[in-house]
Image (cartoon, rainbow, N blue to C red; front, top):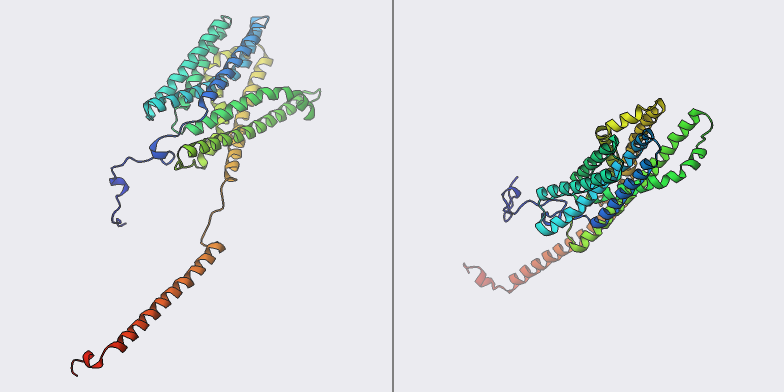
Length: 369
């Protein structure tokens, strides 16, 4: 390939490379991160309080172990989202004050997650009963908050903000959906037999996952659209996020649930084993709940990603090609005009040449005469 004159090749340019997703090489901040952090921390506090109320209301220690195992997934999911939201808000503050270094942003995000995790672990140790399960819950919650903070250290802050928004909305919906479980059980044919109850529970779980995935995809798309409009108001040259960002934002809540399940099975393994060892029914219940949580996460990944991608696709306009009739007509109308101008110019030149030949004296034109 030949170099065009007057242009500097990209490899030889003195200017730093500009990130395609950011204006001027600066990452776009996540709007409303402080509000998201407050909401996520409030949700974590509500989960910790409800878990404490359930454990302290237990009459026996065995019941407390079972209730702790049942409440652990909600606490871990809330800690994961709270750590990510707080780290996102802290990263915006660091960007405004010290610039947009990727290393500084990542370290600050992990530090914010550690603060949330330590605060949650301290609250658990101070308010819960001093049992063998308390330290397990506290340690697993702190680990989830730190991992959530590390996730928020990604460079594409608006996509992380969309994931946090959609995940928080999905968690609130799951808790609110519990009030509709009993009518849905009757709707899906739950009867007196064990098989009918299992089938009804499966359909209720799928309905919950489907609606939660739709909600998560719409929330993710709405947040990214809002972030895009705010960025354009500040800098009209801000490039738009491409479809992978919307795909990841829609699938993010489901991925967070699957990540929370991994944290539960690693950090809370001892608590789950204690609850499963209580009785055969508890073992079956823990296995069934674990399988249901994994299925819900997978459903939310695909439904949320598909919803966000379809919503993004509806905002795209039609692409123009060379076969477009409008463009073809425009080109056809332009060509005759150019041809007429060319013919007119040629006729004018011929007329000028003829006139010049008429004005010249034949005696002067021919030296032999």
